[in-house]
Length: 599
Image (spheres, rainbow, N blue to C red):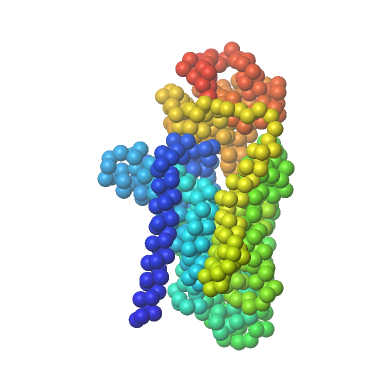
């Protein structure tokens, strides 16, 4: 009974620390006036998620993932999951029912949902640090973890995109696995979280696979301690994957393989892998010796590989292998989060410290643990997952959100070690080392130092802008004039696609989504082609308005790519006779041009 009470009190303590960190971060955002609620900062995904939630609440079917107001006529099917839409919609529905104010309800959801995910992520970062390095690691985990999550930006108010949910589920899965030897339900819950994070989006497939392989190897080399953990994880992973499949995929699509979203591909692989691991762990003949366990696991791997190779070979190609070359050159290659480390070195070297410094320090710390001996199962789980996350971040910058968060665990252990030494053997050297460990572990310090260095060596005149200016057309107020005009189809670049949908009732062709290739290419043809080509597209697709944001980088890129094209001419002030400027938008950040009736 006392052990159970002690466990409950530890949970209460960890939750209390996480709540304090969450309230502190919310206070910072509140003091700033929650700016992200009126300016999404160019994040199309957060706004399109809000549009999806609105459509769901307005009666669009649970299984219908079409975005009807974006793309060619009829829209396109987005690759996201209703698992994220549902809780956001529930918050909006509950608050609107109480207040009768839908706008207020949306704002509450835009603050509450990322705050809830921040809090949950903090709870399990704290618990992972405690499991990894003891009670002394808790305070460092609170401080370093909260700072890391805050400066990532993916938990800020308005952050409705799924990356924050995926990070929370991945950290939670790791935390449960660290607790699994002493808490029986933990492995089952870890399998549940791993299945959910995979169902939310394929970006986490490397982390889910890494967790599965780690558990399989731990079981192979230590059957006594890991047998039940492997069995429970496998059952939880397979069971929840099956549940997600039947509740989020319509029956008529059960035979359709989608490589970029949870579908029959991921379902088959997850169920085979999960049940296979559980079977090997539970059948005596398969797991009676290390050799048999390794052989059984190898056979399971061969079966999984054979299934994918023979039934779903298309999913073995590169994620964007089939993307049109123009989309790759003018869209994909210019997405910030899709850049590699090497591209970042060339484009923004100051960002390297913010993205890679603390994960690299954490990897060095784990390597030193390995060299010095005393390696534990906790070290295997944390080190391998951190290393994979770092490799993913080298391939695409977006992976750094996972590596930065996972780095908090070994960094907290490092600080805890020097805290203990400073307390037990106080000296100037031990105190200075402890202070250095704190400073090196806080991601924001690296980011600030890099920014200061960049500013110090920056040459040329600094550009100052009016605080209320919105040259890139990211603020809600910028789209007010557009929202007042009768609904029609708007020809605009993809960066403006989601804001137009979120802030008005219009529809658009372009949006920064690989499944919307048809709509994006149509916009390319109109903007990069001649006035005559643009006029033909406008006429054939019943376009009513053309939107121009001179300060948006995408407009500038298009004008540079096709200096004789329709968009470049419009930016120079050459308005064709089939367009007329909307008077109230003259000189505004977002200029609108109405297609003349005979245009």
